[in-house]
Amino acid sequence: MATTYSNVDDDTAGIPQAPGSEHADLLSFLQYFETLFLIDDSEHMERQWSDVSALIQAVAPVCLKYDENGIDIYFVNHRPLLYFPGMSVRKSGYNHIKQVHSGSGDGSDKDSAQGIFRRVKPGGRCKLGARLRKLLTWYLEQLREDPQRAPLNVIAITAGVSSDDFAAPLLDAAKALDAAGAPEHQLGVMLFQLGDDEEARKKFEHADDHMWRDAGTRDIVDTVAWRGWPAGFTSEDMVKAVLGAVSKKMDGAKSALAGTAVPARRETTVS
Image (cartoon, rainbow, N blue to C red; front, side, top):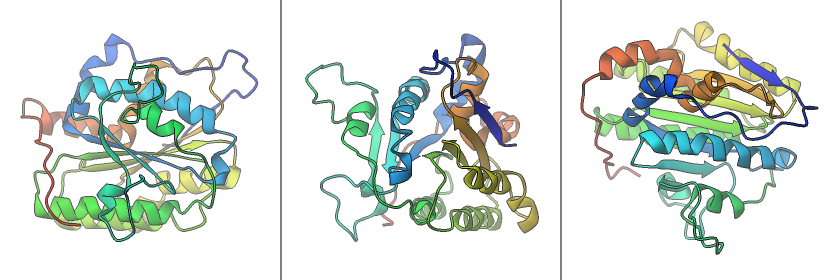
C-alpha cells in the first residue's frame, strides 16, 4: 500500500533516522538482493535535489552494510563519461559502488555514491518508463540465461512527473516473471516520490494498489510519497525504503532464502 509522509514546514527536517538493531535480522536479507537506485535527474527534480542527497546518505550505508558487492546507481538522463549509444545498458550507470564517501576530502571521490551524485545536475525531461524498460529488460534477459540470478531490488527516486508511460514496463516485467515461474521475491520496484505533484501520486498509487490486480499479475510495485523530510521519519519507515517493494514478499523470501548461500554476482554476456 502506498505511504505518504508530509511535514514541509518542519525546521528540524534532516537526514532520516537509521534503522535500529531490532531490524538487523530483516535487513540481513539484503545480502541476497542486488540493489539498484534509479534517480530521476530531470528538471522536475531541481527543488528536491538536496533531498535526494539526504536520502542517499541515509539509505546507501544501510544497503552497503549488508551487501559487500555494493549498490548500483543509474540516472534517468545522465550517463557516465565513457558511455556511448549502442553500448549495453549495464554500462549506462555506475555498478558495485561500495562507499558513500571516499573519505579523501579532496573532491576525488568519483567512485563513491555522493561523489557520483555531485557530478549530476538535474535537467531535461523525465522518461522514467523508457529507462525502466531498458533496465528491467536487461535484468530479465540475465535471469533467462541464469535462473539462479540474485533477486533485484530497484529503488526509483523521482518527482513522478514522467513524460512517458512508466507503468507499462512494470506490468510487462511482472507478466514475464509470472510466465517464467520466478519466485515472488525475484524483483521489486519501489517508486519513491519526492515532491507534492498530486497527479503523480495518484498514478503511483494506482500502480501500487490496482494495476497488478486489474491485469491479473504478481505485484512487484510499492510506493512512498515524500513531501519534505519530517523529523518523525522512523526507523521502520527507513526499513521500508531500503527493502523497497521486495518487503511485500519478505515472509516468503525468508522461507526460501534462510540458510541458503548468498547468490554469486555473475553476469552473462547478453547486452
